[in-house]
Length: 64
Image (cartoon, rainbow, N blue to C red; front, side, top):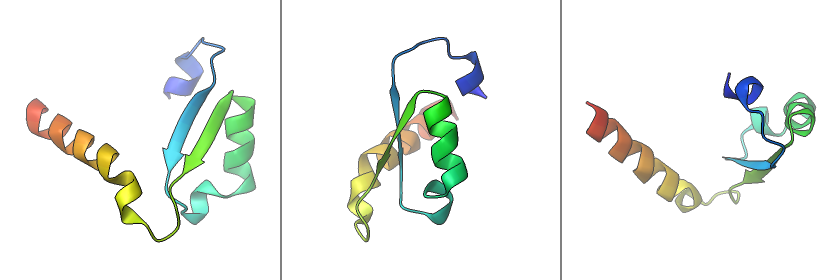
């Protein structure tokens, strides 16, 4: 996984939705131990993630 190869001390923000797997204490502990911050989209607002979804769709289209 990329987090173990990353040598930077700069904090990185991980963006996710509010799924239960992203609010578990184990996930939060992992983030803290690896100098990562979490950013969550607002509850019930699917448009918060639209930019990331568009980017990855473009990436898939360009690589195929």
